[in-house]
Amino acid sequence: MRRMLISGLLLLPSGLTGFAQTPPAIAQPAASPEWVSFLGPFPAVESDEGKADLAILLWHQRTRTPADIQRAASEVKLTLEAYATASGRSLNPTQFPKTAALIDKVGKDTKAVTDSLKKHFQRPRPYLTDGRVQPAIERETSPSYPSGHATRGVIFGIILGELAPERREALLVAGRQVGVDRVIGGVHYPSDIEAGQRLAFRLAAAWLADPQNRAAVDAVRVAEWSQPAKP
View 1 (cartoon, rainbow, N blue to C red):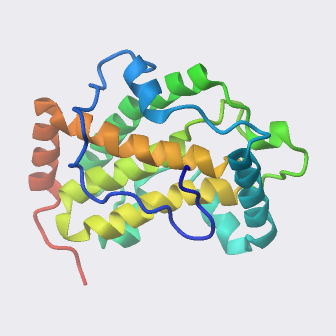
View 2: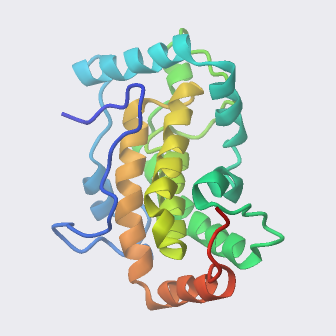
């Protein structure tokens, strides 16, 4: 049974260890059999899990607040600002240009994987399947599974946690919230989020295993994160 997101944050491992096998390298074809097998199929519409998926989405639709919608809308274009409070820093790209460039690279590498997996699975967005679903944020035409925002939300939190280990858990919470907000906004099923968040931990392990990527993270930490955050 898949873990379902209801009103809180989907709890996932906070570390990058404990995988039974070495994660596939990101350099492999994005929709490689390893990545496809790791995620597995999404719930069928008429299955119990599929019905629960929709019920949870509709529950969020009924209970979302203006503040929830505003936050979800602000994350449609996901930037460092979503992590400012959790990091204890402003994270303005003009003040953290190397961090912004690093996150941009992580985002592009991650999107290459999620876009190809979306193309493989071809799950329609919930509002294309059920007319009761009324998104509160920008609709998208790309397939729904896995959620790219949920994947990037968590992997950005992981990478930022490498820069500020003392803020790691708060950054992961902020990253998970990005996925939750895609359900609140009505553009994803909970199972899209669960898949994307699981994928993020797997991708982060592969990305950080690359010596060049690890060296880039270390260089950014020294250049822009050596001073403690302001209280």
